[in-house]
Length: 250
Image (cartoon, rainbow, N blue to C red; front, side, top):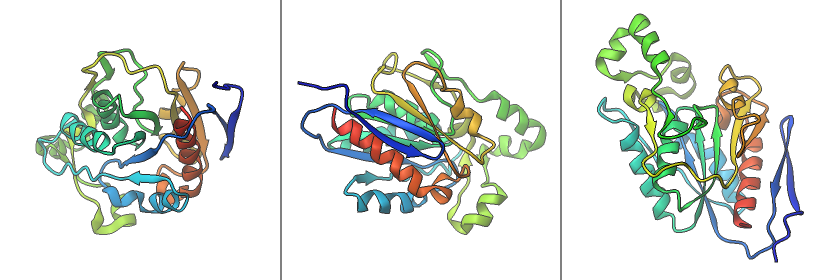
């Protein structure tokens, strides 16, 4: 018999997160970490090490988009293949621009995705079929300020990222950052709860705060910058571990 009254509670920055605990045999869960623009799967090394130290399996696929022809659908197909190949229930964690890609992959591999954690990216809050519209605001800005990026279809890594991570960063196709995401298989399932994460010292925190009060979404605030793996690996690991624990109980 399932007891829905038990809760697993953790503190994450300024936010208390309560997750439902179901009293049943634990099911294996794998965390799939999806990196954002301009970086690679190396971005998650610090978080993967912490998850592995807790006995939590993880995968961090590399999703390069250094060709202008590579868009959201191509990357989403690759990510969905990784998710489906895991062989266990998946908690998908997506950072920044990867939220767009992860939403499309979730649509494709929905039978495998148990929970999602989306960190400061364009959330799938609108009803289908246009879950995330094209980012025309960014395109309009680039047309005026950096038309060469639009012409080339490739966006070089920002100077701040180059200074922080050196030659590990790479250009990103504009199509993978701005094209719309359309659900092919109808509305995303209402369960499980999706978690939107804001960082206290980030100009992009408002993207995640849009989830506040939206049915099916939980909002969490962590202390740190948009560079979540660099500024808050311990707090993020705590959050992921709690979500994975809740997912394994379902």
